[in-house]
Length: 274
Length: 123
Image (cartoon, rainbow over all chains, first blue to last red; front, side):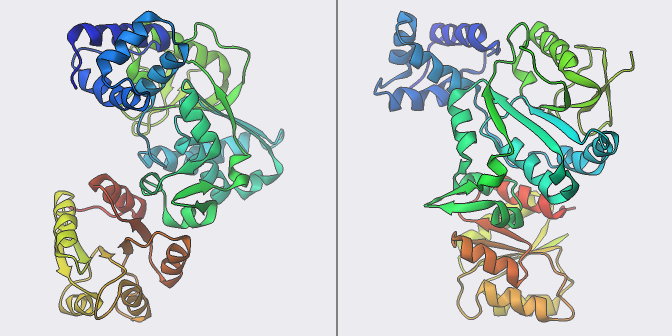
């Protein structure tokens, strides 16, 4: 069932207001593929009926479902591979060296989605840096979507999801079969704190400072003023010698000049010296 | 780069061949483990072998054990591609010497991601 131009504009305005995410013309298919199943699940039949119900503004739960559906993104374990190689070979060894006296690391996955990224990082730490066992590692994972956060916290993944990017030796080591699905083991789950968080909120609550912030594949959805505001907030919660990762298709260039690329290939950024 | 696809289903062989060809591999096919060993004897060592589990003549598990026990092919990277989805099977395949394990059904992206994990690229 298609969506009319007027209905698309309504949904686009709504998503922009609620999550500061920009849905340009041409993204009608995205609204249809994401909201079709929601309409079906809620017994509303068509997207048109769903949009009509949204317009009444009587149903905050429906609004949450719609924002969830529109902001949740397909992801995989160790997505793009390269950033994780860079974390393993350069970022964590450097951070561990520099934090050796305080024995404390603070990490934030700021667009954690359904949890594949934080769990990938947790596995990477366990596999490669056993010396961190005696450290205080604070690991925060946030997302705007309550629904995906609930899933991430449980750490239960379908066969299709564990097929994506997860090395088989890590599947065997860190997951348990749970009926037809696979669950991350409790020792890995307990490493991570999950919290709902809207990156587009004007000011961040007191948090951090972080040694490492993962902000991957989310900036592409925001307009430039929102990107600028987010990076400004990130600067305030990132330690001066910390690292910020963006998605491989994202950049700070022409958005915030206070960051410099750490390497050309990994979308890893450092704060320029004051 | 050459890839060896071993599956008794002609459909799966065709699907995997298309995916691997798009990734730049030259693909050699075999319908079971014994035929795959013949292919290995007859040509240069492939960059990767994708191996089904349940096949007539010689199944994937036996094929992996044979490859790992041989002197000339023991370093061949092996990926199980199978409908076997129990944890015990994954553990068993890895213990026998499989480097990776992909559960059917799969998508082209999954095949590509698994090859990336192994650091194997087509030309």
